Image 1 (cartoon, rainbow, N blue to C red):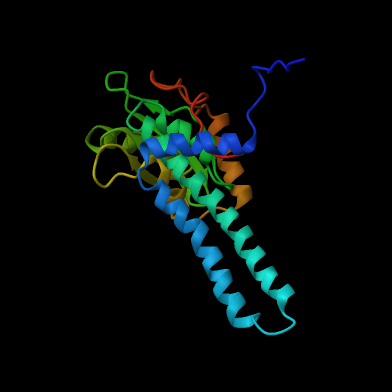
Image 2 (cartoon, one colour; image 1 turned 30 degrees about the vertical axis):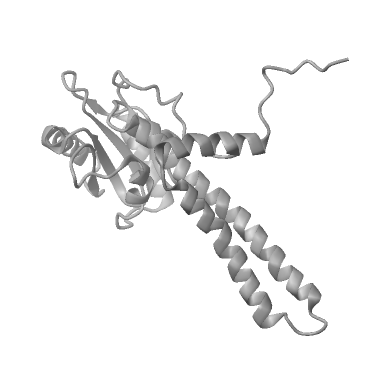
Amino acid sequence: MARIKDPNKEPGRIKQMWQVFQMTRRYDSLVVWYLALAVLAPIGLSIVLALLFASGEGQIVAFVIYIIAGVLGAILLFLIVLGRRAEKAAYSQIAGQPGAVGAVLKSSLRRGWIASEMPVAVSPKSQDAVYRAIGRGGVVLIAEGPRSRTQRMLDDEKKSLGRIIPNVPINYLYVGPDAESTPLHKIPGALGKFKTSLRKAEIHAVNNRLSSLGKNALPIPKGIDPYKVRSARPR
């Protein structure tokens, strides 16, 4: 009796990785070369080390261990590179759309940072927005849109926050079409570059103070739904 396939059954891990690879290759022509290097470099290094340090008599076990370590390293590096390139490709598809920064803050924010996918300020006319992240670098206001249109929004929000948390550093991050702007996939890394000024307890204290005083996020501007946009990565 033939088995009936369950349409709701999730694909296996190998199939998932293949789907992620296919999606990434459509938007990243260099992914094949990066993945090839990720596989060949650890295996090649393990072979060289095995020949140098485990090529004598009675060292067959050590030789095999070097090769196995190289293969395992290649698999790990392959998954890391595929995940990073897939994430970059996924974000390239939503770049420039309202709510894109919120999608990144929801799915890729690093530990030690608190942020909402909802903006704290939105321009009704242009749909430009300002998001807020709180972490070791203090408060970071992230502008989504051209710098010429969002600069005043940032300054107004900074002035408002300065009255509530006068001793906390407030930094800016620009995400938009300008040449000096930060790309979507680099937002988590850019947040980590700000000088450390708050401890863990202080981060939560600042977040609680802003939340209690009504400095909550506004509704998301019309555009993509950050709940449906997640970086594609192998499980």
